[in-house]
Image (cartoon, rainbow, N blue to C red; front, side, top):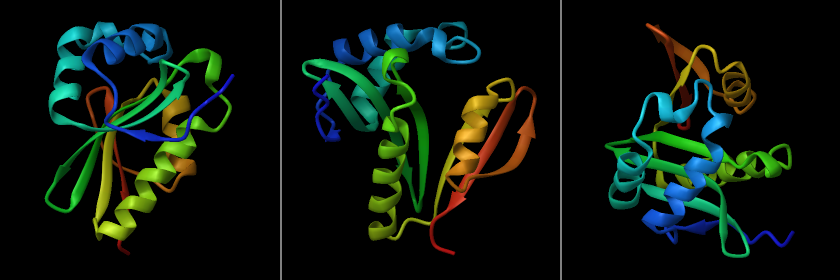
Length: 146
């Protein structure tokens, strides 16, 4: 396995679709139950900033986010099953956090489904706090300028 460093915005629409299809069952609930993967991939390709990790020419991890004023909204953080547990998600998130601290951003915000206990625990380990609960989703925020 020859993983490259974190790349920025190098993935194509096809790379993102293939990655999300491979990661589909890792989401709780499965990603395809609440988004159309090709349409979502198109939005990520066209509008998000993306931090990526590759294994040769295969996209194996993706962190997609949007800026709005002084807040970053994470839309997606996914790591393919065979690569989970190696610290890749933490590397991507820490890269984003370090960039934000330098850019004077106030916070990072995201949503997770309540049933996704693993994702919730991951974000809490990284300093995120649950700030609201609506229907079946939790909103978590990390304040970066405290």
